[in-house]
Image (cartoon, rainbow over all chains, first blue to last red):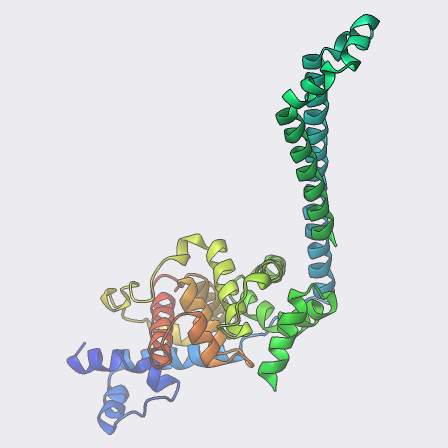
Length: 160
Length: 182
């Protein structure tokens, strides 16, 4: 291998695809050097094979398959949103029920069924004061209910 | 006119217009499948990966800001999908293949006589061993309908260096064919 071989090595692909014109000296070298001649021949073969490669075409059902997969993915997303919404509603209801039960318990209403005298007592003027003292619990329940309803609205809007 | 219709198509897709997305798939499926099938010789796998490209396009459209052309963005997704498929070849930089340092092989005389089918098969194997960006460059360059500028942009290559990289990729192919894939 000569220095000329090294110089030509870097140009072989450009000569093979015609983007670089071979000088007379290079042409003479290629004609006399078996290695460079073979390399140029190989580079030309590669270039022509690359040009002649088959072009794959999509199957007839390609678009339909893509659309079906998108539909399936959207359905799964909607299902996840529905599940999240249902869980949120269930959690909201559980909190409200727990809040109401807690409120009833703190007001002494849980004793109503077993103690009618206590109910009558609870319904008198004292009850207003007791409700006012539980206003934080009531407010919390209202906020949770509102959040659940907002979440419901959002889920419905997202699924449209 | 074309830019407007592309913008319009993207807008319609973003608004959830299924017909528009079907139109987008029909418009680009030919190039996407052809490009991927040239890197992945298993036809079924190539089709699956192409479908995956369109699923990613559908998911990504709400975030597509239109700074690049739609085709460039799609080719980038193709490159990502191919890179995920061939993780071993995904991260090799175009400048790090070290092709100039490889030992040169003196070709034997029978190299001249291998049949077309044999060399086609070897060429395919050689292409599959190139780093993904090289694969996309070589495959895309010889694909009718693929715009040089889009390819360069998708590969983050300045236009002026595309030809240099292409020659480098083809030199690597030649080296693979005359050494490891003889």
